[in-house]
Image (cartoon, rainbow over all chains, first blue to last red; front, side):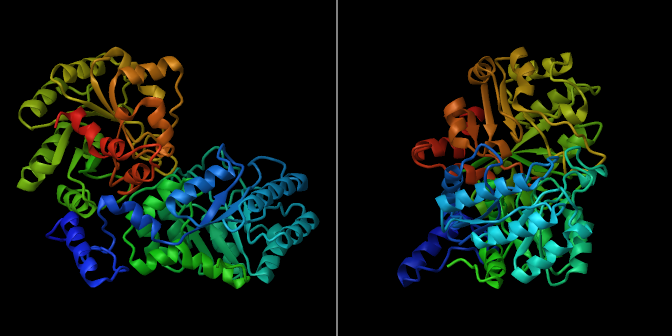
Length: 305
Length: 261
């Protein structure tokens, strides 16, 4: 960044050029830093990108589906992949995951075209889990979100992963917090999936699509990205409340522009702000905000129109 | 106009930072149209003798005329380390510091420590604002060598009560903002500003109603946090939550008044 003129001056002169030439789609980016934006134009820039929130929920905090859509509208998030995983530490019974999935389905019915549902289950109950996959995909759900009842590389998961390979749908799994403190956060049960567990599962099932949850969600994101660098079938979502500077830039270096996904996990402002602040090219922004997840959805024929 | 009331130079020992010099900061400000920035030196958290960090910041600012025009330096003072009164005096009279920065969690003292109270009173008497952050980084992701403690908003009340006529800049409001009616009244009655960088600022519209629109100002907490989220929370407010006049107070008006710029 060695621009000799301020953004304000650049924007003013660029706007004049755009006005003269009628090239209305020309944006006002500074060539020395294609991501730089005058502050008055921040919302214009945010709203310019089509977005799929690859990690969204309903029913996990006080925000109602209507509240969520309100925030999504402010930030130009057109589609949200919603789920309701079971509470950590719960039994994880079929009654529980069915109730969670029903809540997701109700939210999708309330906001069709904005929410796409993802199911949850517990592979400890294999028969009921397979029945639930059938029921939920018949209802239009696409993909699966899991918390920490069973590790992703536990053999219990094998038939579920194989089913999702057939369905061509992604498996989104929670990631742990506190790894950089060596001892995991007390809220994490022993069977939470660590980055190395994802590596293991991805190696065993190279045809499956896994999504490593929220590198901004309290994990040591440098550790996670380095662990997942050589796992081509693990996508990484950048959601979470911890919008540390340079996080997405670092993830880009290790994971690459084709495996990173924009997501919020309820942290809408941090996740959009972090994306806009990151040193991404225009095409990389489009990939992360929308195209990468759209490509995942396309595999099962459920892409966004 | 845009004024960032929460930014840093210096190093964070557990993670590489970018743009953590005055030059890097100025480039970032230019990129995003930020006119002025309140800055302190992160090294002051980790040097036992914080005065080295203040001197470093002073020297860097004076290495380029542009820095002095746009950077508003705050001195890191540790009131439980010998010589802090002299450090305060030097920073005020010789180093051009426009406020002081406390780091009680890292420097291991409580806000009601007699020395801390004395320092804040000195700041009040010399008309300098006192800045403190509810946390520096997310304890969940930080190193095993870093502190684990974080504050909620309620935790700063002891110093507000002890020196109610001081000016306070409360940064990175990342944790609970729940307050009793009595506690909320203390915040309302104090000359205090919270910056918009913290994760608990997500419902800024509601917070404006609760605390008052004069209590908030744009801040980034960069380069520890990203440079855009603090402003996004302001710009995404709907007209019924904040009209242009109110947004301008948040962008620069409130902090300009607070810092007497």
